Figure 1 (cartoon, helix red, strand yellow):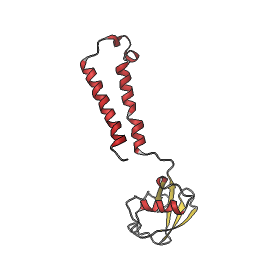
Figure 2: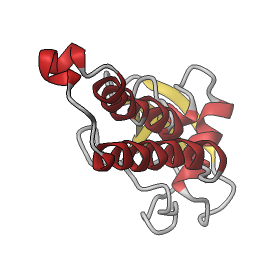
Figure 3: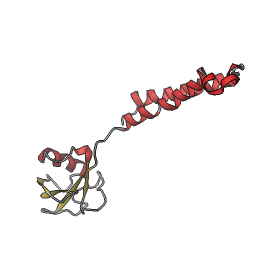
Figure 4: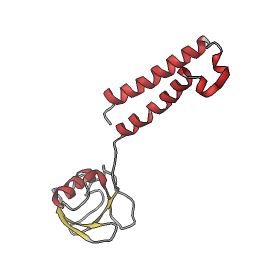
Amino acid sequence: MELEILNAKNSKPYGKVKVPSGATPIGDLRDIIHKTLKQTPHANRQSLRLELKGKSLKDTDTVESLSLRSGDKVYVKDLGPQIGWKTVFLAEYPGPLIVYLIFYFRPELVYGKAASLRISLSTHLAADCYTVHYVKRLLETIFVHSL
């Protein structure tokens, strides 16, 4: 089966790709498109559509389930640069930890003269728990989760 691949931005054809079987998932089709037609965006940046302004196809859908036939048109939209979830979480989690620890270790920056008062045990415990919580999240992101 052969599908015509077009740019969703301007409807210009990229070319045609041969699909090995109807059971090919859309996720694999994106890889095939990029390998066959080098001028297309990388597979991670592609959004495939059946209509110019239509919805993006799910990676789990198959060519057969979408009733695609030889010669049908598939539009490729460039989603732009993509970053992984791991990067998002590694950028997100240190923020609250750093801000909290600034309040804890340098209270005079925030509270002024009131910072000279004795820090209670519950404040120390809260700082310990908060720190352990966010360090655990960072370590899980690095070593456990395969995002």
